[in-house]
Length: 190
Image (cartoon, rainbow, N blue to C red; front, side, top):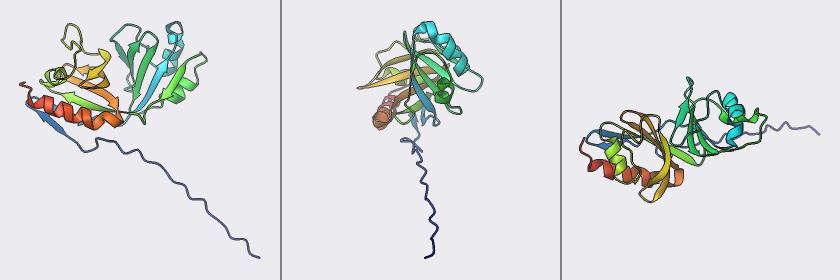
């Protein structure tokens, strides 16, 4: 009997971004999907934050509503006294955190979240159309980050520039968030 060679077939899953190709906006504001990114929900005792900061290549912020970033584009957003959201469009934060020799919890939430970039002179007014958080310059300067609500969903808002914001939300709510922001942008007068 002749032995037949069997070749294993490998399937590669490709994540489809839920808002791919969507662009919207109004007077003075544009809404676009953010680039795909790796995201990690990180929990650690603040006393051990320095060890994880070295592993991540940035200083984890320790004050409310703050963020930190490095030259490679990795972001760390403070969400609570022992909680951060790590966002990285290029690198592998989970791999870096796996090398840290300190007790921590790191959950890859890349599959769960997506983000919308809200940019332009009308960006703040658009977000304020459905967010109770005070987003004024005095309270929410460039680099600020917060977990809050937008309409009826939980989001994380990061102010990335003078007129630029990143709205992180669950993929399952992304259509709602994008549609909500589109409607709010129509009422915006830049």
